[in-house]
Length: 496
Image (cartoon, rainbow, N blue to C red; front, side, top):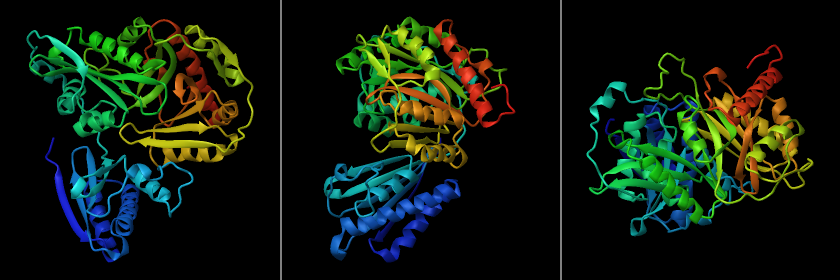
């Protein structure tokens, strides 16, 4: 890993200097090898940020400066726009996805800024002013740890381990464990940046637990991911240092975090073991979780030591989506498309959850949806907040743009099963090449979620390994739907 390259530009908050600050950002983005489209987006975001500082931080031609700190690291380009103007509360600004935002209110401007960057943070520095930080991930192939490096990690002596929440100053140790275990192939890039890990905890998106020795060494980590305000969380980001393996840390962390999830009042937990081997699936199923979906082609290929996969052609990694209820489930009233009602009934039957199938109807209220793209995973996501079949043309356009413009190799479409327009939207999506991937219990704010997938790269289902049981029935069903979707967009194709 190389030391980051750092720059600083200080200019007056005067429109005459706008092209200068845009040129500086353009040069940094070019050196960082971003695409012309990404560079243009950052230039537009720079203009919006600069003009907002000029107009709101220094109103009435009050003299003041804008400082831009640039940093090009191995994995990201960071741009910090700093001023010492009027204080403000960023929580009062319109949200980037607020459809009512107008140029005067800053809504559209924030959309430009959020569109240009992978992360956007507002920071108040007290008497030192305030800043807006834009983080742009840099394209880079995964760099798994060489197999020969494992032998260089000696076994740690016997220790007594404390299981507790992670402290902020332990984040660096956690990121190093992820590198030791996965190289740079782990799917969530925030876990390679201590500040990214701390930010997720502070933002309420992650509950982070660690196993710590009596000497203060972090030996393992586990987390509850909650990127959306829903009554469930994903138990994930479990990693054990190679020097501390086979000491029961995985079980101890899992138990502790399950108790924490109960304290938070969550309905349940999702667990998503990989499908390149079945060993991790068996552990999840033994824990009591039930398979209910397949996250096919979820992230770039990952390598696993001693799994005998060296001679297998690499393809995008998939996950078996499983769910564990922490309290008796309530009855579900869902709007499932007719063709998937039998499979939905079998999924719900695993949880002994009473199910009522409700009829479809068009959405009365205007629809709403969110679109996101993860450059590191080359994955797009469309999340329907309010289902409205009238919005299907623009939803389809978003899906096409994610694949054709952003370069997404997989696009997910999440539909709220509590809403009567979901079956109608599902029909439109399946006509356009999406296919049924499963049900995500409590994955939507108002109930369960139906997930559809659309792939832009080949996927050999023969390489998807599923532990015996209902998971294999689910794989057969999803595989048949995947083949149907391929024929829907290309009638000449007869196989997945």
